Length: 173
Length: 75
Image (cartoon, rainbow over the protein chains, first blue to last red):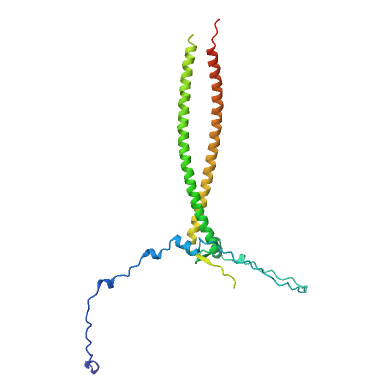
């Protein structure tokens, strides 16, 4: 053994940490009410102010300055034609634009448009309910129609039978 | 100060578009069905008209027979 390792380092003794009782409550994840995170449609409507009539912004008259007439300069040479942008458009970009400009990322809609959409959805709900009621009426009417048709069939058969009888009686003599 | 436009963030925009597309398809199907029902109703009306006319003819003939039978003649 060399003299390097023969010397032992003196390490001060560190006292071990004392344990303490753990409350079970501390180890649990904090519980929160999920319903608070879910925003109900009614809340969205309230937030968007669906009930309130939309305030139209005051019309602003734009006054454009009078165009300045520049003296026309005749050029000797015509301007060169610029290469068309779409011709060099990569295929992937084309697909992206075809699938929609909002394919990725958040999409926003103007509040007034959003309110109109909500209104239309409400109206659609009413219309569909109305159609359901009409369907029920048609069902009842069809049932009645079927019953009436059956009645008609029976009466025709009865008429036919009676007519045959009369025919038989009359041709006896 | 000019009013700034306010926007609402639309989550799952693609899903909404897909749903609207499906609704359009269902609407087209409903239109086709309604057209068929209309054609059936027209056919039904036509058949009922035939029924009405035929019953009128039957009534006339029965009346004639009744009248003829009510006035017997002896030869």
